[in-house]
Image 1: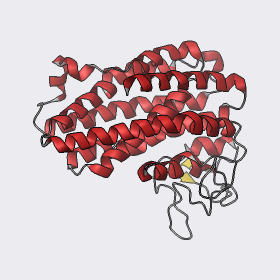
Image 2 (image 1 turned 180 degrees about the horizontal axis):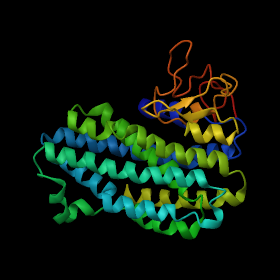
Image 3 (image 1 turned 30 degrees about the horizontal axis):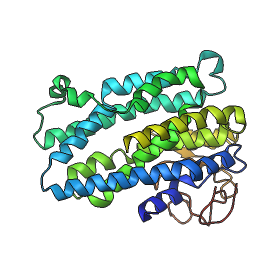
Image 4 (image 1 turned 45 degrees about the vertical axis):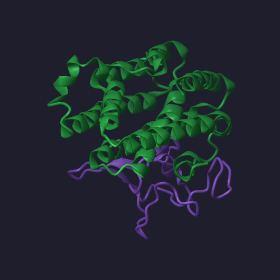
Length: 239
Length: 78
């Protein structure tokens, strides 16, 4: 295992709570499914970064910022997060009120992240302002149906299904940030990633906390694991 | 996350401070550290919780303080 990833697991993944009902489940899915996916994704990130650095130009930095904007732009973020808020209906709110609170906070985080990508594009002179992106289809196109399409399905799956995306996909985001910070010196690219770091770890922690706290029986574990299996399928297709 | 995790255990030591920055604070009279360190396992911000006596960072949780791990440095299991 890459040392950056091993350190990340020690810091953020392995700590848990005493007697956490979902701890054994989280350990199993982490070892059997998440770590292989995280390793594949982390290695792909490192490979992309090395390729970009070897290219001798900055086009890859523009691509990363545009892709980031497409995935975390204001419109995308509000729509995606709204669907996730709706995955807990009124009758279940008393059981999952803290989950609502965490997801509401994430709406702002994602919208803020799009601003970081805009700052890179502006600082490098590729756009004058965020408004330039409104006419650019590349700033609003991303290829992962799991990212947005699956989010639309959460209200129909289970209130806890979203924990799989938080735990698995947000860890991929965290590891991607760690990969950029370990390889790239450009201050704007570092800023773009560093300023997201605590917030992405927050999103991962939401998934970790929900699995540890609420996923203690097969009834709660099944929708989370099925969602994780779908995300792993999408990752295999993407890589 | 520290607020949520602490409240789940009904310890309720985390509150929002009255001072102008309105930061999350930990009430030392209610907090049972080092008996309980659950907030440390879910805090996402490195260095944001400090051990008062030593001044050292407790996030992410140091293995000599936090006892509950799925696996890892301490060898302990939840």
